[in-house]
Length: 124
Image (cartoon, rainbow, N blue to C red; front, side, top):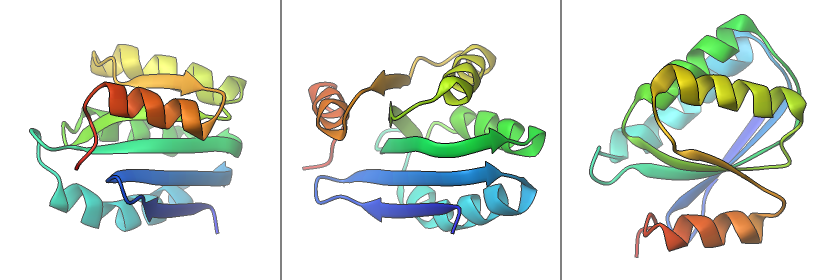
């Protein structure tokens, strides 16, 4: 399975992406993410910890879809752990393309969670 989503007790969504993200895998990811987006609002967005350490390649469709996704204000802050060079470059591109500053990189999930909580972005 190219992805896994799990909502944490504190209301932060864990996302694990794996392998090559092509059109089919990114569409499946968006389909599985949709219920979380449907439950979120611009004033109460879904915040994510994204482990991208196992992503090998992002197709052009995946890059465009992830950029469009970040334009959606129902997506809050995103803490990325395990980012390889491709994930860092893509994230930088996404931030420039969307004009947002909602993505940061961390060495561990604990650091990512601390950052998200410090920004008062978690649901009680």
